[in-house]
Length: 66
Image: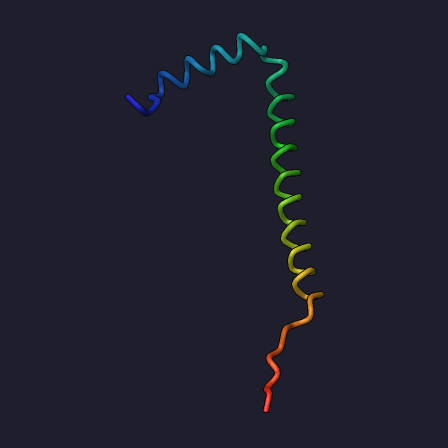
């Protein structure tokens, strides 16, 4: 009951085609793909910024007292 069968997916696809139309589906797909690419790109930039921040911080060294 929790998973979709092939028939369910066919019905969902049919309803989506009726609502959006066949001409608009490629536009929606390309927009979605572009959004995913931008999201992945921004995540990669965040990782690079964090790596640069860690390199820029001076390492704390423990001084021996004695």
